[in-house]
Length: 238
Ligand code: ADP
Ligand code: MG
Image (cartoon, rainbow, N blue to C red; front, side, top):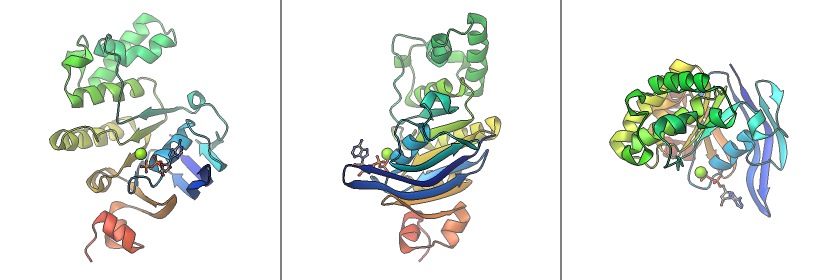
């Protein structure tokens, strides 16, 4: 299992300091949730971990290895976004297996892995459907399937449920928590939804204005918020 460590990560876009020195350890196998208001830098931090964005300074370690300058594809991570673009002309099975087809894996191996992945996500009965014949929750599961099939050590989720309606969201919260238990992978999950953070996280990282306000378990943040901002955000009793 694989830890993720950030050392004094800073990021500026022109004169805008978006990340003002972030130090963080996400332990191997942990479900770590980044919360904070819109614009506080959650996505930027995730993109720096994935390598889609380079930090202005500081270091990123994945599994103890310095990956600060490594390509995204060399980091052993998979990312799931809120707007998941499935290929409309491919079936569910072909969408899930797409990355392996691209990597020219043998057909039998792809078929076996697609089957395993579909089992985990309860998509087995939908493998021959096209995305347009799926519900929002099923589409999001296909997007997660595309990530799982590559067997990443670390999953990065950027508000993956925010396009779903409330009842689907609560169902998917449970499914993602179960998926984490099943795979045992390290997961970093970005949301601006306090309920998601409180119910899913082993550890919550509260961000505001490019800094970490507090890190702790849901109960610690709830019972002992370090600042009024954290108290307000987590909804602690006054
Ligand atoms: P969050 O995900 O918490 O809503 P973001 O990480 O997307 O926040 O953005 C943090 C800040 O950085 C915002 O002020 C945003 O406008 C700015 N920002 C993000 N990406 C860029 C970019 N590529 N160029 C300029 N500013 C950016
Ligand atoms: Mg964002």
